[in-house]
Length: 262
Image (tube, rainbow, N blue to C red):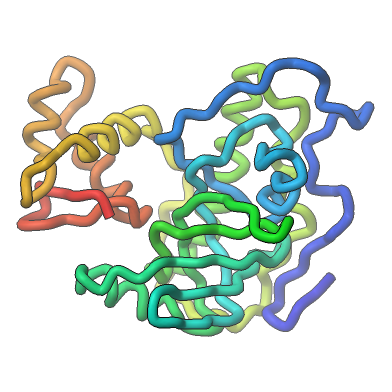
């Protein structure tokens, strides 16, 4: 099915992870840590709602990351409502307003534009039997290639999970018949980094560290390095903090070595 943004998505069965026999089997699902950020497509979320909000490969999407195009925006005094689509389907997104943080307010206003590609971090919820995302952050893409990067992440993380022996089918099926060609969405200059993301374990540790920090200036990169010098190099830790900032989960405070959770 084509839409006016040059995207195509197939509402048929091409996006499931079922085995050839059509059943996922009786094996126990592997619980997903609440700190884990799962890159997804909208089709994956739509299929998860009638499955007790479990992805068809067995993962629990506690925190999800989605890259999609804004097709409509509805602002109220307490929240922003978005309709977004990514070539596999369409979904509603709600982001609650916190006017106390000027930096976040600015980024939100930049993202709340029709025909804009955005990165969404949030949780999958069910409302009136329909999938909905409650967003922690909605941010405008800084590069057109972030879309490609995200789609590669979806496949990469699915394949990595498959290798753990939990998946019963190919994660690439969740992409459906995606076609993002000839669209007129806003984008910036492309970047060259289109490889799949790494460092999920380290990033989870950083998130846990920042959750427990009470200092007004946030958590320090140097302090985290000192605490974990037997496991991680400074370069790896700094990259993990910066990646989380790019994902919209943290932001720098007094300088580029101090971060707080959004």
